[in-house]
Image 1 (cartoon, rainbow, N blue to C red):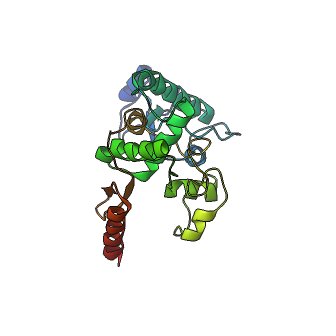
Image 2: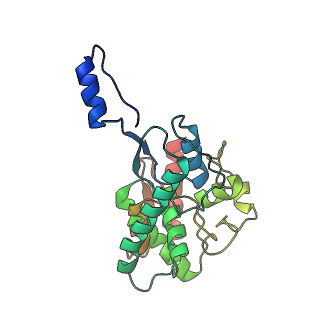
Image 3: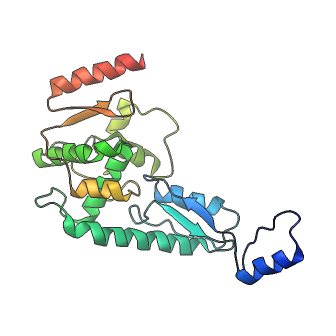
Length: 240
C-alpha cells in the first residue's frame, strides 16, 4: 500500500510490475537548523499528505534538524518521534567526547548554548569561535547579551519577530532575555543541529568577548570593548 507515480502512457504490464514491486513515492521534509519546535510543528501540520494531529509542542532542543523521509499517510507524531530519537542519538554520540572544564555543566545548558550559537551564526567556521566568546563571558560573569534570546523572549518561540529589534527590547523582563537575566536561558531557544552542538562541546579557546555582524554574512570579533565599538561603527556605516 502507498502512493505511486504512473508515467503517462504506461502499459498495463508495467503498471502491474510497479505495483508488484511496491515502488511507492518516498517524500522528504527538511528541517533547517535553528527552527523552534513551534515552527517545526507548523511545517508538519502544513503538509497535506500527513495524518494525525500534534496536540503538544515538543520541548525546545529535543528535535534534530535534518532531512526525514516519509510516505503518503504517515503520522505526524511518528515523524516527531523520529526527530526526537535522532536528537538523542546525536547527543549520545557527541556528549561523551566533550571538552573538560566547560562552563556548561549539564546537557540542558549545553543544548541551550548550542541553540544560541545556531541562531547567532550560519557560518560553519564561526560556530566554535562564537562558542568560545560565550564561554569566556560565562567564566567572567558577564551577561551573554544575545539578540536571538530577546526575540525568543518576545515571541515565545512562535516564529520570527515581525519587526526590527530595538534597544528597548533589551529591557524586556524575561529569564530568556540574556540582556536582562544573567547566565543562560532556562532551556534552549531553538533546535540546534549537530554542528552547533559539537561547537558547544568543543569551543574555541580564545580571549574574545564581543562580536558583531561584518556585512558579509559573518562577524567581526573583538577582545576589548574599544575594538568592538570600532567594529560596531564599521557595521553601522555599512548599513547606512
